[in-house]
Image 1 (cartoon, rainbow, N blue to C red):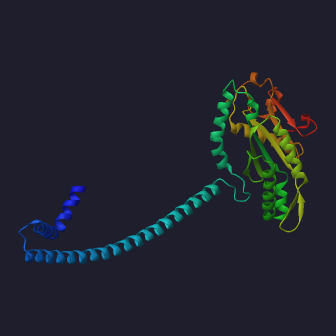
Image 2 (image 1 turned 30 degrees about the horizontal axis):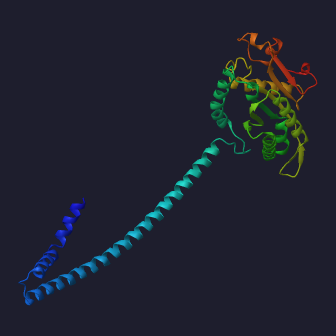
Length: 318
């Protein structure tokens, strides 16, 4: 490449190089006359003047090219900055769209779509943990599902109107979020029903959280758009995944949520403003695997232990 460039330059300045060579030969010849030297000098001078003019012309042309290149670079950078800004805006819009797709628009809580996506990886993680016989403190890794329902919510809509009902739902969602730990989240499950999902939960957490939530709701004044303040209560049902630690894969998370939902309705049928938890007994491992996952049958068979905020589980109505 270097030789090619040199050859090209020699071609461009062929005439000047020839004059330079002739002048050099005359200058070194002892027989060169003064006339010959003057002619050689004159040729060199003309060649130099021509070369100088061409050099100045090329310099001016180069300046214009450089100016255009700088301007082009500035324009390209401006276009690049615009594209970068648009890409960033697109990323932000995609993020907002994704967030909207997993968020309940009324309450700002997560929705069922988010729950399904989250549980795909979480359940597999828990199955690996509980399948490892050497893993200690397994019960601290349980997933707590807590179904919560606002008592007599229909009467709020009927009496004060749906905008008032929506405001109660928003304020209720704030209470749920305030009761969550950093690793927990609340889901709008449907209508006035919500689902709390608590990761890495000890088996005693459900009782404590359910009572704290029940009391918070009972003590809360809900402010309606009309300026009226009302009070509400809630009913709660909960259970854990895995249901039985020795057999983590026996019951899926959907069935655990169903047990929590059955526990919720047992609390509602038993007077409301209460919580019920469904836990396996020590005899659960010996229970008939074909037994329907219904609270009453599981409880009567000695496979299920029902704990409640009621004075006694005997007061429960299924």
